[in-house]
Image (cartoon, rainbow, N blue to C red; front, top):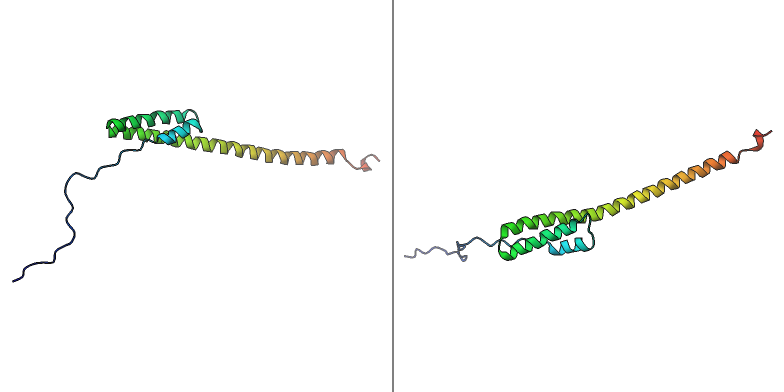
Length: 125
């Protein structure tokens, strides 16, 4: 009498320690870039300080503190990058709209002065 059942080829997963969570990123390169090239209101330097703290905590094994400092470094890096991109774009937009407005104003004033001073001689007669 054969009482064997078809066997599964897959083995059941081992029960053990949960998969290890990767260590938090320290965003150090991004902070160095913001500090050197786009230092808007010293936010790049603040991000660099938090990135160095995150790396130190990660090396020492304090993962929770490393996550907190990494999150702060990421926020300051994002603010520094956004500020350094948005502020020059706003300045360029203001300059362009100012130039357009001044050119229209100059064209209107030229038209006004040529009309006023080149009046016809019919009025004199």
